[in-house]
Amino acid sequence: MALMAALVLEGTFTAIVTPFTPDGSAVDVDALDRLVDAQIEGGVSGLVPCGTTGESPTLSDAEQVDVIRRVVVRAKGRVPVIAGTGSFSTKKTIEASKAAVEAGADAVMIVMPYYSKPSQDGLRMHAVEVARSVEVPVVLYNIPGRCIVDLLPETTERICSEAKNVVGMKEATGNVLRCQELVRRLGDRLTVLSGDDVLTLPMMAIGAKGVISVVSNVLPAETSRVTTLALAGKYEEARRAHFDLLELASLLFVEPNPAPAKAVLAKLGRMSPSVRGPLAPATDALTARLVEAMKRFGTEAR
Image 1 (cartoon, one colour):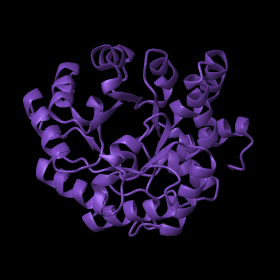
Image 2 (image 1 turned 30 degrees about the horizontal axis):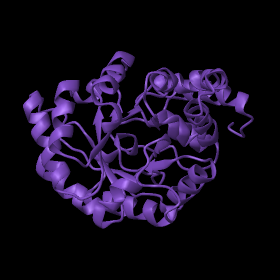
Image 3 (image 1 turned 180 degrees about the vertical axis):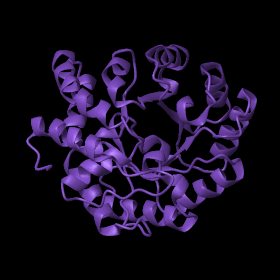
């Protein structure tokens, strides 16, 4: 498949937030366009719309397709678009994946099914069925803290043997040992990307190829610099760049993502801070801390 060969999973991929109008009733498409432009100008390697950072559970099916299509059109082929299509239902995930491909996505990312707590065999069947339903690359997303279930390395290995278009893993267990085990077992067969900004460099040191990032919504160039330096083997410089981002990366998860990231972007004048329920906007106290953390980067956040 040509698209599979063309997708390079290296560097910084932004899990982009979905900007809403101030009352949260609609997607702010102009703010979305500006966000896409800022990401590409900042040097990111790719865009991931409609992931959980994009508040996908709160989007209607039509909104999800519209956001993906808008990002694809705005990106103009400059970077790949990996659409988040995962849900708690295999059937719905297949339908969303097909719709994303129809909308122009270069690949899809599927979070492990949440709430229903499937077994390892259920996770395997889910991933394989979804992967076989589309002819684009598939990135798995493992985040037990949100989904309750944990896709184990041996199950991932079985999925890769049964579905050749499964090419990547957003690994967000918060455990560098898990990344290490995936790389040991699968080598170049599966590209591992950090799902935690605070662990990007440690994971790259043992074989991950980059990050699917929240921080890059706010600081795309600075986040991209970390992965670019690490991929070039310049670990001393990468470490300094990584440490520069640690305070902000930690603050962005003090309250539920993506409310803190949207608060910063609002302070930068780029979008409304609105999120959809059940999420609440970032508190004033956290927003003040975020503004203070941004000062070191010379931004206009206030």
